[in-house]
Length: 211
Image (cartoon, rainbow, N blue to C red; front, side, top):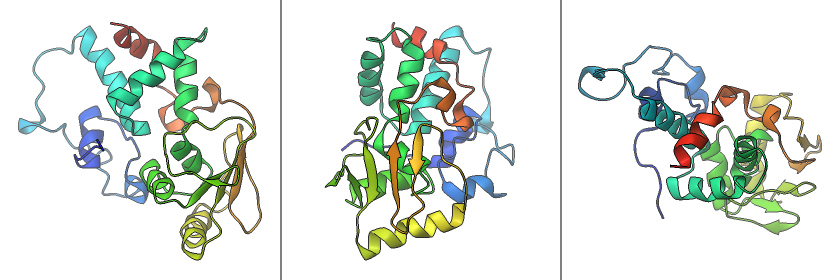
């Protein structure tokens, strides 16, 4: 199975943007972006001015890295988005509906990588059935619940205690019961995109993806 093998912080340095790929490390003094680390490469040097194509490519790469999707997955999501009127908003909505993203935004995991692992190891159930595919697209009224097993509950409760009463986005609902559970209330819109990537310029991504 294809996966990213480069150090997570290297991707943030390449984009010169904090992509929140390392959980608590991203909020500590060790974050390379906070330390103004240079991009990877010989002395972090960049020759010449970034081309129009380069600007669009970097915008697409930022979005892919943030949600942890590969090029083939991204192409599939883009094809789905082109079937709707507003392609850019539809693309962001699809990425927000990924099961690993929903698990993270419900507060069950510290980051998307951790959420992906939680799902892939069979700790998450969707509508009462175990689902170990992180890329599954959650639909409105789907119920996402952590499996009733000691290890599954311990992993999730540990992080829920860390985030405390941090609110979930409007398109999701997290129950306050002892058993971690959440539900998608409606399809996410442009305003529901993770605030840490909300400044993404999706129009630039559409322009490069249609080439």
